[in-house]
Length: 221
Ligand code: HEM
Image 1 (tube, rainbow, N blue to C red):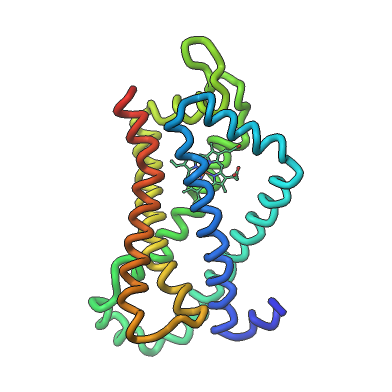
Image 2 (cartoon, rainbow, N blue to C red):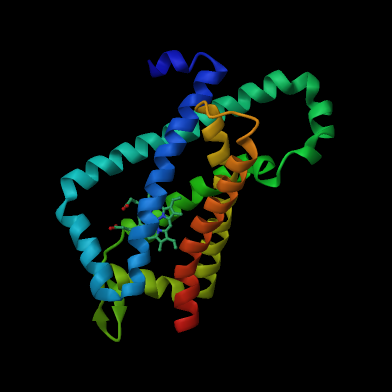
């Protein structure tokens, strides 16, 4: 069925929309889990331990997530190539009307590519390292994953890179959420402005929510 959808432009858009929606659900869950860091090392590490205990299920979800993420990226690349080919002769007209397109929409490919790079770095940074190793030490005592995250954000450069990535995520979601709502059929002139506003509000909330963690660590020191 998926292969059939790949044959048409609207089919590809639907794949990007559904995978995008699933990624949005992950991002909401991930943000809620990460905000537990404000509850201190015990609460955050208890959350990490619960995820570890449920390892087989979590691994299955992570593999699914990887498939969804790669599908989202690859099918978007196919759409961009297709759009560029078909828009070739109207590029001048498109360029002339760029002023009417929101910044988030103009930057969707750039923010998407940046996020792709961010996720790879992020996995190397937090997931694929020893959670009890040197980066977890605070006052010569291992504070597990809490220590890893906290110590990382004590570095202003590390924090700044995360905050920039969260800004990109916000921009990407501001375009992506309203776009996926329309692609999945909720497309009525009366509701479009509301969907657009909700999309921007939601994206801002997510970007501020994630950014609050490095900002908190930097302020607290
Ligand atoms: C301040 C922002 C963030 C913090 C503090 C954070 C923290 C973490 C931590 C601690 C882990 C490792 C979990 C473990 O190994 O048990 C992790 C994994 C992960 N993060 Fe983030 N994250 C942030 C933002 C993001 C964003 C914006 C995305 C996606 C766009 C993301 C995607 C992932 C993915 C895909 C994993 C691997 C799957 C998982 O272990 O849940 N993270 N993150």
